[in-house]
Image (cartoon, rainbow, N blue to C red; front, side, top):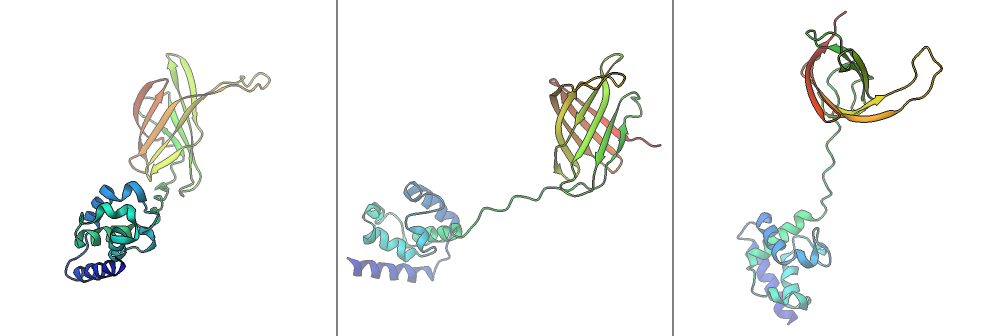
Length: 220
């Protein structure tokens, strides 16, 4: 039995010289018959000798009785393709996460919409590295003649021109009275897309209402 396996394995190796291996096809076959027992990446045998169709053939024919159901199921080329797919998996570590984007410019300034005086958006940024988060303050109105301040004390650069963070409403004591700490309440999210060094689109959602405004640096 062992001698027959060796002869079969040598035949597999000889056949490989005439045909290129197709790892994509091997993946399909592996998922059909191998993945249930060996998993992905493979354990319990295949990982011991990647790109070794002779070992797979020997396991099917004698070494692993539980694999006997595969006898005659796949051609020598199929086994070579499976071996190529296993080799492709072995030694591969997950790809590193993409680097955190860094902002293109320092956007620190007072931003506004010239056609809508009375409200504005203040941006403070330290540096232009990936860790340079923004601290933003928006002064606006929640009703006619009723002012409101919101803060965005940080967030994430999702691209070199797009920053997203959570919006908070803060309350406290007026400056003419003794200081008393107030409440900090999360009320929504903000995304600012900088379309140039001096222009941007501000989108924010507060208490379920979404607004988008075109803003620009306020000149002095």
